[in-house]
Image (cartoon, rainbow over all chains, first blue to last red; front, side):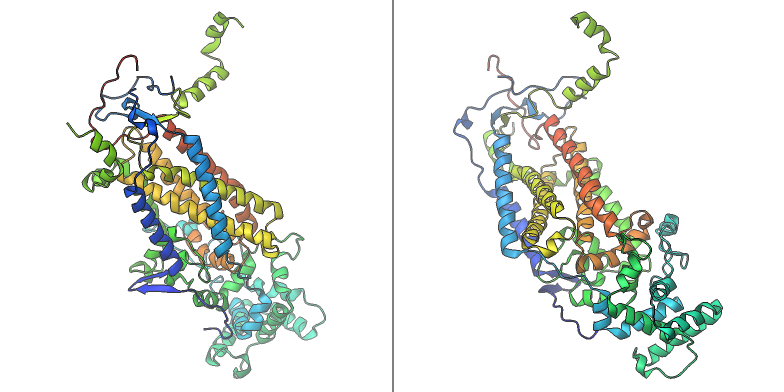
Length: 55
Length: 320
Length: 216
């Protein structure tokens, strides 16, 4: 390693061959959470929704 | 109200599925949805930018390189003259020194051709040629240019080996037949220290220097750039492709591309770049053609996530 | 022009041909309908429009960056903030686009002649990755140096580096601010037209819709 390096890496999670930055892991985790929420959260309906119109 | 119409009947094959225009409808405001989405994403972006900012690690200058690791500059200069550096032994598109990588025997790198010719010796000699007022350096350059290629190679290789034996420290190199090489290497270090090296490599002879090819190649031939990157967890074998300096977000979407570099056979292959690229192209093609691939296109039927998406519809319209 | 003349020349009139083609891209009334099929009732449907909105923020922040020039954001706090917005809008763009992709996969949204919509979506994903790559090469900071030095081997290994020199930031910047955004933008337009042309894909194993009632 070169002497005089003053840079610092961020925080990383290591698990076997996998190495991922905490920030990237947080982004991916947030995406999964948002995806699941999008599937299960109730979608608001307009008041007239009961009046479905046939084509 | 004529807002919903059937598409014109025509070349459609007999239908196995009902299509969207056959279904009852509800009010839905697409424009309002887009405007709200735009406002939300703008505010979210501004908030994230204000809270987390973005990285701006200064580019490494040649002067910083010379300051931080002068021995690395000397070793790189000697290597360029001896033809042993990465760029000197690269092949296409810079020179003919190597065959380059291939995929399944197809030499794509070679087929690209040598369209950006770079002489590694010139990465050292050209900046030195511009130095004025240094008679010793001018004499060293004259000696180098007046010698045969074999003699040049012999001097430079001997110096590279001697540096290696001395642990990279030029001051500890044993005496040997190095010709003008130590003076040339020291001369490059001096130019680098002065801050003139980037300009000499990118804009000498052309006022507008926008092409950093030669500067980056020289810098990358040294160890300092890679050491700095590895210290930041950006190395190719550290999943570096998806990482960013510090704790900033990187490119999470590169996870699969960079994954292959971490495992065999790619992690130990000389053709890893070409092989991983070919594999990713194949996988991208598979993703693109999912609608046509039996089995793959049936996964959503087997794992019924869609029951959640359309639970409201299935509840109101039970299957008959 | 008389009606008869119009009809007589319609067959070889280029303008009429183009007009007919444009009008046929999306069925009448389906470009901006104010109603959607009843099954369009899930938050997963908003991720397409969220990625479209993020793309607009990416373009807008990128355009503001072009005003100050390629080095502006290193020297100005306002420039740096706009650069931060550009970065984070890209992160949001990819995140929402990938969630959209997940959603469409599990809905098997390519059914009913919608395969090309899926294909253009995947092309959008890939071309966005390429555009982001040239963005990293245009940052003129340490990241650019390292990505150029390391990435060149991948590009050169397939022979493309001979024409697309990632060590040349001037070339990369122009690709990043002109060629690639145009390509991504054109794909977005194509993708959205296809979505409006075919409508939202019906539920898997949907029961037959009730026949239309006269007078409704």
